[in-house]
Amino acid sequence: MPGIHVYVDGLNLYHDLLRRLDGRGKWLDLEALADKVAGHRAEAVYCFTSRVAGLRPGDVGPRDRQKVFLRAVEAMERVEVVYGSCGSSGFGGSLFDHSSGSGAHPRF
Image (tube, one colour):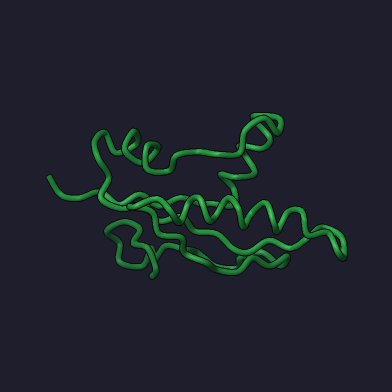
């Protein structure tokens, strides 16, 4: 069976956990989640995220909490954290190329 790679939107996952669990839990075993989604042991997990800033000048709480969370995630054997950037202007394009006519293909 070919190896399965799982891609995780780290920022949205983290914030959704905060919202759904009302602040009672912020940790998730990404390897176990990937294995469950894959139906067997996933070969690799990629957690895409960006560094957060404080909501107010001098507010380091969100940044410090994210550092702790990401250190735990990076310690997982099969997880690779991929850092990007997040801007307030939003994303103006498509992540997929539909031009081939044979379905959508990711643009990487």
